[in-house]
Length: 280
Ligand SMILES: C[S@@+](CC[C@H](N)C(=O)[O-])C[C@H]1O[C@@H](n2cnc3c(N)ncnc32)[C@H](O)[C@@H]1O
Image (cartoon, rainbow, N blue to C red; front, side):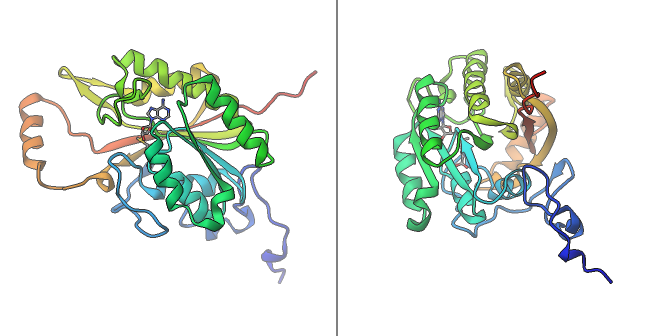
């Protein structure tokens, strides 16, 4: 009987998943509802920063949408979940973060042996000079463009990350937040290789008794700059909670009294930059 492992691997253009062995990828999610009972704590990850995403998101997306050694660009690096998971998965990473102390912190968490593959930039991801800096960095890594774009912005003003005026969490209104996010998305579009994927991790918020659908509004801004939508993934947010249980009853009372629902999900919006059309 012919051994299927002897067949040359059949992979998508953007990942190392061998489609000849597709039954062996049970750990790769293909459903649009992601339920993670707990945050992964191995591979150097810790819940140390209010607002970091759970590493399993990076594991899923980088495995599915990048090949080994390719470059993930994260334009809201925070405490560096993307950078650490890039190291764990044998990918490279360029991370941009506004707060210099976070950049120093992430740098210290990257193993010495991986430092050449993980490049960290302190800067405003909405600014044109950041685009030039990322391009220069990519060029020193031997690449013209990034292979995957990760965008995990502040969820408007839900968590205030700093006092810096160009911090998206300090935008004076939701409209101003969306305009700044759109500028980051535009920069990311320019820096991403055609035919490649981008993910936006975002949740909604309530204000003045009304739900503000930040997720859908950010998706619309991504589409304005040229991205197309591939999937809307709904992920439960249990794994993000700190001090679980302490305030549950209070929130439940408020929900019952105010007629609203307590957020238990956020979105992972999977978008792509269309491949270049051949010139006629
Ligand atoms: C939701 S957190 C990202 C957390 C990150 N994904 C992690 O797992 O640690 C958003 C980050 O965006 C940063 N930020 C806000 N405005 C920015 C801007 N204009 N340019 C770059 N980073 C910005 C904040 O300082 C914050 O660290």
